[in-house]
Length: 117
Image (cartoon, rainbow, N blue to C red):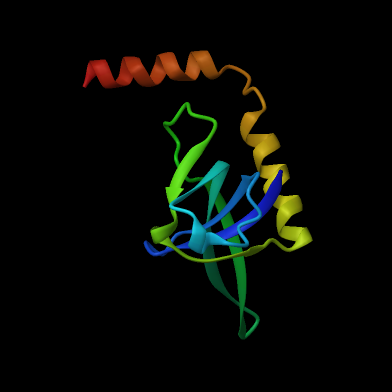
């Protein structure tokens, strides 16, 4: 599995897992990706300068499909991910799939709140 960066024409910056090398997109209509994460840049003033940091969020949160097809026509550019970014991506995915203690109770509380309002 390859870890790749994809910039979409919507402005989204993604890090994805794919079996595709993404070398020859001109010959394809679609690419198949899995575990897409959208990257948001945050700039924060610090000591007279600016620090840039990044937030990772699941790109498609409500999809059960393990593989998602993206039309090549929606891709602006692709690239290999820096090792440090790939490490953070893998840590994010591991944390995102870890079981959360008491999640069922939290879900029940949310549903009760919605039904009460």
